[in-house]
Amino acid sequence: MSDLSPSTYDELVDLGRQLYDHALVRSEQEEITDPRGQPIGWLLDTRIPMLNGNIMPEVGRVLSERLMLKGVDQVVGFGFGSYALVASVVASTSNPAFMGGFVRDERKPHGRRRLVEGPLVREKPVVLLDDILNSGRSATKAINLLRQDGFQVVGMMTLFNFTWSGGRPRLEKLGLWVDSLLDLNLRENER
Image (cartoon, rainbow, N blue to C red; front, side):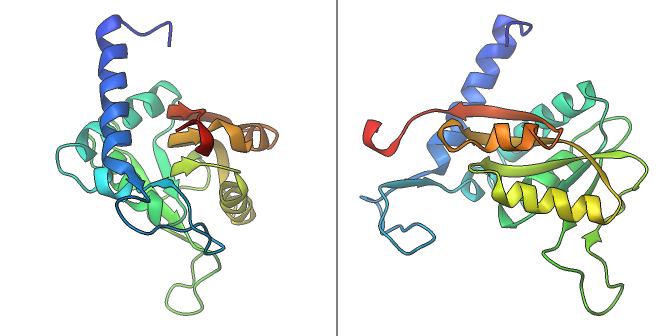
C-alpha cells in the first residue's frame, strides 16, 4: 500500500472497516455453526454489507479500479458470496465496461448446457471474485472448472483473506495473483 496517497489509504481503511463491521456476526447475537454443525464464536456474512446500497457501489468502484490496473475487464464468481461482488464490478462506471459471469459446480444439463454463464470471452483473461479467501479449496475448484472450460484465470480478488488458512499460497502455486481488500490475521482465541 505504499504507493497509495494518504487519503486513498484512509478511504480504503474506512471501507474495510465498514465491510468488517457490517459483516461480523457473533455467537452472542445468534447461534452460528461451522460447516460440520459445530458452534463457532463468529463469522463474516458479507452479504449484509454487499447488499447495502451505500456500501456496494463503493466496493465495486474500488475493485474495478484495482482490476483496471491489472488490465483485466472480465470477472467471474463461484458461489453465493460472489454474486453481489460480480454485480458491483459490472455496475461500476468503467471504460471499457466490465463483463461478468458465474461458474457452476457442474454443467447445466438442459437449456444452453453451460458451465459458465455470462458474456465472457475465453480468449481474454478473467479474475475470480469471492467474498472470503480461507483455505482456497473452493477457489481452486472454481479455477479448475474455468480452466477446463477454456478460460484463462489470471488472478483472484476477495474482500477478506484469512491469512491463517493458507489460501493465498495455494492459489499462488497455481500461477495466480491474489488481491484482497483486507488481510485478517486474527484467530478465534485472539478476539
